[in-house]
Every structure is written in structure tokens, then in C-alpha cells.
Image (cartoon, rainbow, N blue to C red; front, side, top):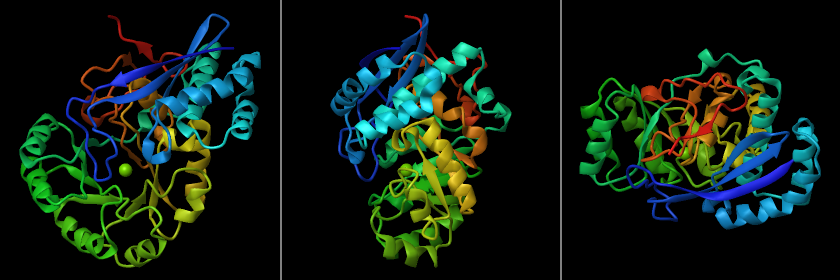
Length: 343
Ligand SMILES: [Mg+2]
């Protein structure tokens, strides 16, 4: 196989802000990965997050480390062994590994002429409805975003700022029927989180994602025993080994390919969470339709989808899964079913 890659700058329609923000939220520099084999191209995308220790430069360095292993491999079917080799030669770097993993699935699907969901035996019509995310902003900007999202029956609201309750009031006024998910992105203390869960019950909130900093296990244990709403781990659950650690502290986990290391690791996390009686959410970073469509391939296995990363973009350079107001339709073409948009 032959490896190629380049940076991919993505611009959200609105500056994307969350409670723990290291960068401006105006542009997201991802890395587009191509694995070529037998005249076919497998696409992958790395969506590195500095919170998890990655950016486009570390992704490039990781891909150069992987290059000899990838280019020595004769075809994409030995993917499980190959991905284990990548893990042995370089720890971490999960978004870089996720991009390679997506490209391998894409190639496998193209070689056998089947979409990835079909290779995995999944029914694309079983994909759950996805939420559409409203980032933290001034109230008037939140109101504008809510108008744009008026047709979405499921919203995810980023909280963890000083105007949390005013934002929830605006959401409720704009769309009283919407099912709402709240993501505090580590922004609360245990007592504030408990108080918030009690208040959020009145706003049609389904669950709260990552209320506390990821290492606050005692705080989570205290909160879980008292919370008015289910609690989902995101920052606290990155990889397979984090799933059993999150059991007892959270009701479910939010899996993202950029954290897990790709589809094959995400599948292992889903089954582990099920064995522990936990709910499963499938989320994303700001990603083009490559990363989002890759995640959507396994969405029929999860309870909650939050796959709006490409729908938030001003200009998605790829075509793949469609997001019609949160209703996900997976492409039926082989592999991931993604292709560059013309022009
Ligand atoms: Mg989150």
C-alpha cells in the first residue's frame, strides 16, 4: 500500500466554543489520509485535539513513523495485525491511528464492493437520530444558532459558562419540543453539577455529558449517587481500558474515533460497555464527511448519536453521510462511501 496525506483546514459556520477551550474555534486543522492499493484509494481523516496531546504536526510525525509498516503491507486485509503493530511502534497518537484504520476499512469495502456497515453486518436504518450541537456563545448568537437548528428534534447544548441557565431558557423558548443533551466539557464542580441536573430536568434534558474534570473520580462517585439525570463520560473515557474505569461513575460513555484509535477499537469499546450494562453514545470532533461517515458506519450499534461535525462546517470538502436535521442516511456505495466534492 502507498501512504499519502495532507492538512485539511475546516471552518465551522460559527466559531465553535466549549468550556475548556485551548484554541480559537475558528479553524480546525485536520489531516486527510490516503492509502492506495491496487488502483483504489482508501480515505481517512485525523481530527487531532490538543487536549488529548495531538495536533496536525504530531499526526504528520506519527504517519511518517507508520509509513514503512504501511508500505510494506501487501494488502489491507491484515488490518488487525497491522494496527497492533502501529500500537507497538508508537503509543498514543489515536487520531493518527484512527485515520489509518478508516482508510483500511474503506479499502476493504472497495475491494469487496460492500459498504463498511454491511461488512460488519449492520442495518443502516437502525442508526439513531443525531443531535445537533450549539457551542457556547453570547446569548444573541445562541439565539441565531437555535433558529438555524429549528428543524432538529434533538439538540446538544454546550454549557459550563456563566450563562448556563439563560442559555437553557433560550433553548426552551426556541424549541420547547426538542430533546436536549447537555455537555459541560469538565466545566462544573460536584455541587454545581448536582444543582444543575436538578434544574435541567425541567428543560427536557436527556443526559449530561462530562460534568466534572476527567480525574475527579471521588466527585463523580458522589454525583452519580445523587444526580437527577443520567451521566455520560467523554473526556473520562478515551480508550478501551477506560470503559471499565467509567463503570459505576457514569451511566454511559461517549466514543469518538479520534479518541479510540478508529472503528476497530470503537467496536471493542461498544461491546465492553454493553457487558458492563452501560449506554453508548457515538460522538465526533469537528471533522469533514470522511471522519463523520466513518463513525456513522457503526452508529446502528449505539443508543445516542452526535455526528454533526460535518454539518457544522461552512464548507465540507467531502460528500458522505447525509445529516437531514439529525436523520442520518449512510451512503450505499462501497467502503466508507465518501468522495471529494467537485470543485
Ligand atoms: Mg463531549
